[in-house]
Image 1: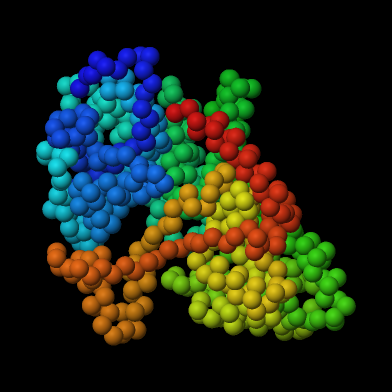
Image 2 (image 1 turned 120 degrees about the horizontal axis):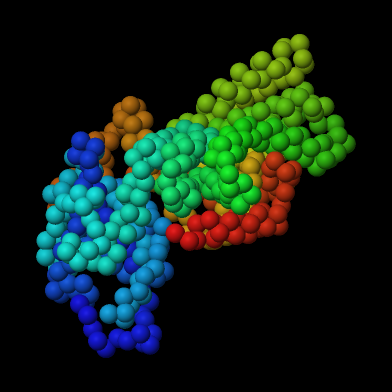
Amino acid sequence: MSDQRWGNNTELQHRSVVSSFIFCFTDGKPQIALFKRSDKVSTYQHRLAPISGNIDQPESPIAGAWRELNEETSLTQQDIELWRQGKPYTFSDPSIGRQWNIHPFAFRLKRRDEGGRGEAAIKIDWEHEEWDWYNPEEVVDEESFGGVPRLAESLRRVYFELEMNEKASGALRSGLEQLKTDHSSGSHELTTLALKAFRDVVVHLKDDTDWWKTARMTAWHLWKNGRESMGSATLNALLGVLADIDDIKMREPQNQWHRILTVLDHHLERRREMASHIKEAFNAYLHSSFLPNIQSREKNRITILTLSASSTIRDSILDAFMSLPMSHLDLRILESRPLFEGASMASSLLSEFESKFPPSSGQHLHISIYTDASAALAAKDVDFVILGADRISSSGSVSNKIGSLPAVLCAKYTSPKARVLVFSGLEKVAEPGAEEDHEAEENDPMEIISPWVDSGVKAVNQLQEAIGGSKTETSNCVVDVKNIYFEWVDANMIDAFITEEGALGATEIRKKALEVKEKVDKYFGSF
């Protein structure tokens, strides 16, 4: 393993690699697959390792992980799913003249009843001599274990249970499971869940000597391993909590634990006020930027296109309509497949309108529900397209429910004077980075397929058999059903962000993104 050609004064070769652990769970107990490297590989021959390999630029780390898994084990998304990611880290091995930048991932082997092929699908290539299952608790960074350097450290970065006490790790696992499986709540509600989970963990850290590091690690995992596609709000909320806890540590070394828990409760309580501030901002925006333009035309109707389900958007529209000198509210709502949140939004709006505007009020509501494919028809002659946001990039582009981009594009074409507004708390502004850096969230294709089956679509069974190329082992046909929840709307298409601090533009968004980066570096940069 050692090579004397490399000395301390020799410049090390830098390599960015993925380190992917395959987990399986039997009766809730985890095992990990470790692979013994063959003598044909260039480094660490005959050592136990996860599936590892170089990241081929310009691919992302997760893309590199999927590629290496397929090349070295033949596993595909039919067989495994991304379970967790770990915080990248760097270490040097002067004995071989390398500095490694490690990107750890954990994948879960799907059971046969989930459509997977089980461990029979694992077929190793020439890079490995053999493989076997191991208890993660027995993996150590000792020569006697026979692992590659930092094997245990990489494992602990995805399997954090090994670094936490039992009650704290149980609370974090429970919180992550809630975040992963909740596909009906918006990012505001999911962030509240994340904060509650964080508090549940912190309660059990009081007697830990390194509790501050564990608390920061917990926040990182809730951000990255809950629902990262909706994680910007979670990130900002947790950074705010960490900043307040850090301040308490500095100012109040005595009796700080009670103060810390009080601060956490305060953050949870304060979240309830955000929606009311956004409603006030929308009302102010309409009266300053919309009402003067339509009063001269004696217009008696406001027409709005929206999609998905958001109680903040619903309440903001109805409260603003109550204050406008207009008698007709025309709402066009896209149904928002595959979960049909738009239909839920329409039902909720109808119920709220009837409770706030009795027939004697002289106010009238017309709701039109359109299929997502009818966006161009729905967008004709609208005054506003109103979107929520699950993530706002530093440039001001917005990631939102799939269907948002077609709605905006159609409005720009059929109603050029329509204004596109994004309703969002500033906590959804992400740290600087390109939109492409954020992986698209793939979801269960059965959400798409089930309505086909229920409607009796012809030959749907044939499609199901071909999904993932699983019809036969030798099939040369592959069918993919894409169920992606989010897409980007470019900043140039957005007229204003309606936030708890008022109506803002891209300049304020960029400033907020830089503030986020500073906090990310401060609280997540040192473990």
